[in-house]
Length: 510
Image 1 (cartoon, helix red, strand yellow):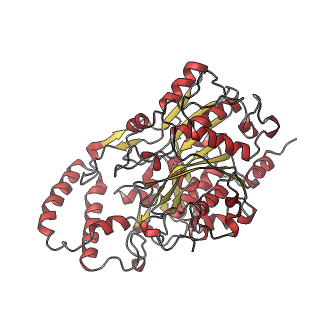
Image 2: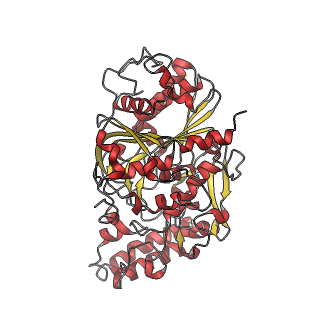
């Protein structure tokens, strides 16, 4: 009899990571068909007239990983059946953080491109042999307009293709319970702009990691900040042995989770890859600790050391007091009062604060620098949950589902990531079985020193959970670019991503 525990452990011990570098652009014609009638391609009457680099790159990653190698170059080739079987529930988790680029840049330097999702759907469907479930699901930022996101990505065209040709339903889920119809120049998060959403049709589960959380024994619970002004809610779920996250049951019910993050930099944790991408499995963003109020001298990580001085400190402290007294209450009356007060006080105080660099404050505010000691804990907890919490919402000692990773780096994001990055055209797709190994490779490929990324170091040496990367030199790079194979034996910066400003001169390889 096969021991299923050993099977899944062996899966995560497979440290092969594929890195394929192809053309640095996306096909734009929905439903993002293949440009070539590959022997195994299931829609022979649906061939694109233009090149689809994502289809080629993802497919080549499967080839590099030697999946179902005995059937290479034949109509029987079915690479994902190595870990997906008919009847499985498969959740594809993209990076759908926002619906537009607020600085007018390329939206697809921020979010996963639908052409990458299309090729994944095709091969998952082949592995399922038409029997099972495919769900594309994420919980974007609260300000994300999901309707606009679907329009900008043309993702429903993939649904329509599968229903028309195969009578197979592809589900697309916004896992959030609400979104905030907040415009860029709004003063406050007005309660009247909160729009209720159906959320996960299976509901959400509150998972308590207790002493196994990275926040256990955290010293400054009373100073933590979540996703909105209501800090009391965040604090209630992160104190002592209560370390809770609200997780999508659709994700927890999955037999296989396919993580499809974007290759981009991140202001709070250095890089956005698999681990940071798991923020999207949490359905209530205010359960997520983003930073701790104040500077390190005050026990916080909201700003770098000695950042708050004189009038800058007065302004930030006053603003925080008003947030806690007014906006945190989520009252339409108090929201309106804050708006009125803000507009009047703005003109009265303008001469007093005229020399303050508001742009610099905005850049760093919220723990947007390498000394953020909060967010890495949160994302480390989320990968524990994704691997070790079972379908009945119980925390186990053995991984409970297989996570396969495909990182979309065809166009990545650098500089002011993750929300307003500059596009970085690399043509790269990264894929592998062990999400931590893939994250290490992605970080290194971007030109960063993975040893300076705290969550990577902590997961490699975790006290309670095994992530099956004993030594990064055991990671085997399978690639069409020979120079990439030596990435752990050289200081070559490879793709040379520009880090977020608060990480410059810290995370780069020297």
